[in-house]
Length: 472
Ligand SMILES: [Ca+2]
Image (cartoon, rainbow, N blue to C red; front, side):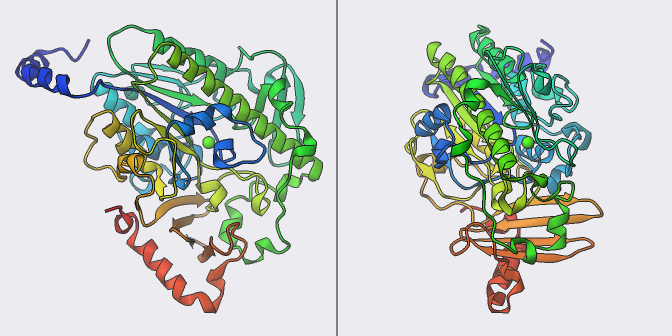
């Protein structure tokens, strides 16, 4: 116990009477079950998907508030997670790529799990919370942040080496879309082990509440899941996206370059696309099943009432929209991700919120739900008012940024109705979409003279930035 020193003791003695009083009236310190799913877009039953089966997350959404317009601050794993877990935007974290440890750039930052740890919570990581290269670095702690945790575990997993039926659909092309359907429960999978660690954490009796960062790898590729989850999705039921001819004609070169590592549709034909989508869906249902196991254990131990559950995907994922099968775009499917918060007794539980929220808002929200004061320099705002009144107005815009080789940088501002994207670097350009008339973002209005006034207004939103879009 390194923190017990003269200073701690003296302060404790002085604080003791006040603390006792406060404890009588204040609620118990809640456990925090903080669940991340990798490359998870909004294709969940609770978000209205017609085919995907996610009964456990649907139930969680019914017991909490589902955020329908939650946006990540960078649509790639490492930068998004660094931003979310520090409550700071990429311009402040200066993490614009994968494979950078948070503490390299911010030695003194107090991360969200660290805040809880510093205040007496038992802080545990099971699986991918900060960046982890999947599947290459599964089982390693390469880009973890040790000061965030009391216990930090990267369970190994067999990933694409799992014995079963499957293949790499895009073999020999500049992409990898591999799946394995296996028999049995998958005790050799990292996600299964992560659930076991989570359940062991709940069983520990150390007198402390816990903060549990539970990071699932699925539905990130390779899509490895028990056969019964593949069986949920007959190929005949899978529908592929139809992009109108010429969809990409009005898309800036910079936008194209952000995904140039992958060929258009990864060179897949219709049958291969369906096979790829089925594998992604099967991985979602497997991850959902893991979530169900963990929440079931929580209920069995009678801990559900005093546990705040937060579920988030680190960014979205394209399944063929604009011929993309990846993240790293500033389109809706890549920038938006699922977010569900379930805290007992909130008036908005069972409802959804259409208000714009950003992933930097998660840190101050969870801190408030734990009764903790977050660091003053955070760049998001607490969503707790939305947990009681999900229909309440919140932010005027949500922001995301993405980078690409040769100094290309794209910034997106999403308002209630529009998306504006500004590209800087060697190919400066703009995009503007009207979600009311064009929800799938096929027509770039920035190229049309008749929308010049709207373009000016959206440029002003971008120029004012997040400080100008704050909730009041
Ligand atoms: Ca990811």
